[in-house]
Length: 200
Image 1 (cartoon, rainbow, N blue to C red):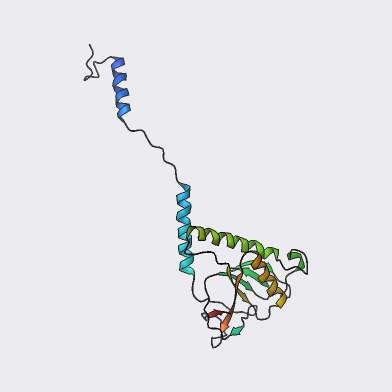
Image 2 (cartoon, rainbow, N blue to C red):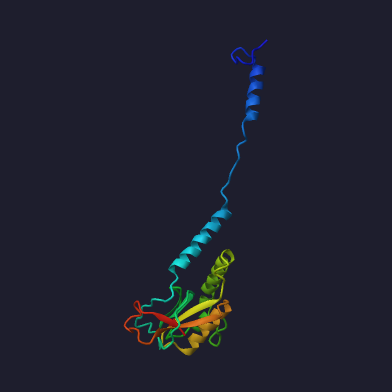
């Protein structure tokens, strides 16, 4: 008779039986996969944190020959929002150029409907992308709801038609809370370099 305590003397069938028992005692290996949803939540939280860190109560704007900001006696301070800049030659969304202007006007080919239309195609696309991003942040962080706020920084010589078209296009992207950025009276006009700006 084989001795189960002495594997060297045990028969092959006994050895197999001992191995099976030991395998059954070992815990099964749990296969763990990377949870992509948890990582997305983490990245969203980091994004919200960075936005909060870089958002300031006043904007620092560098004026140039193409961007001369009008002055005002308004004492309201700027709030964090999507910024649309209208210079003499370009329209920018948060510092990224959306389209070029011709003599301060939007080319009719860039509008949805021609010369008499108001919707600017190259502007509606980045504004809708900003809306989707802000709504995503709001869904993850109820303390930062989407309020449809946009700040327009326009050169003082911007044609009224261009201004109306920009406001209309922003409204079509659900940015209906429009504020115009101006230089507060008494601030240095030489730059907006560190000068505070207010909403009008």
